[in-house]
Length: 359
Image (tube, rainbow, N blue to C red; front, side, top):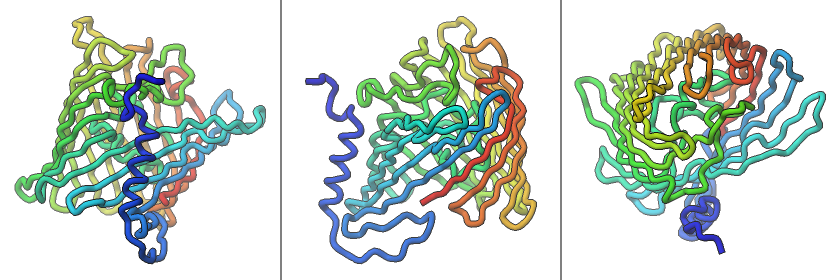
């Protein structure tokens, strides 16, 4: 018999919790489905949704490859008036095929998120379970249909664990003509989810040094100012944490920006992380992205990033230009050209395409 606590087995815990919520539902007719809005299951008291993405890459020195990148299922509902349940179950890298390689199923199942929210007041709530780490902007909206580019900047993923398990207090307060959102969290992944070690520091990169990116424990704060129409958003991240495979403890600060006007959008993030050992080891980096409308529902994307990791001998830098077509908000077609300077396995040159849909 395994000695891992039951709650540490997130797949089984998700299934049991979902089944319990289903049993509380009442029978009713489901309204018509609309793409991106989820599918109501009123007889279960839940709404089902999710997203899917397919990537095609034609990178320098590599065969053209098709990858069914992500299949993600959302289930959420309100079992009680002040309680909200949410889970995201995902299979990544479902199918990979290229000219020199037959199709290979290599999917990894993961419980991306599994939590209960409880409203404490009209402005504050507490979250219990597994959630996306509140560091920066991208990590909290990272689903492929919701972002503009095919590839994810290292700044938004390499410096910290992308998931946390524990408690989070969040809410908002008025500030002048705008609002300040806050998130305060405490992570205890080792105690609550000791099997969490699926994601690597440099996702999808075949590097000799690429440790798992998962917390042992930690705590942090995220603040975001939003003006009256949300056209300007400024974020501040601060965290102290330990990673399972990257001792010693680390301190991180980050800034993020979002600004939109007349259909244009400017966004970016920057982080600085240092070890508490005093050895001078640090990670630092930042990216900026500009989105410009070209025609009806067609946008030009320009991105640039520079990232320095203590795990790698060289600074990684890349520039991307691309086009994104969104015939409707839940559906996007993205074409991107990247020019990388650094390790070609991490910042390759070449062309990428993706099709993503929010269900």
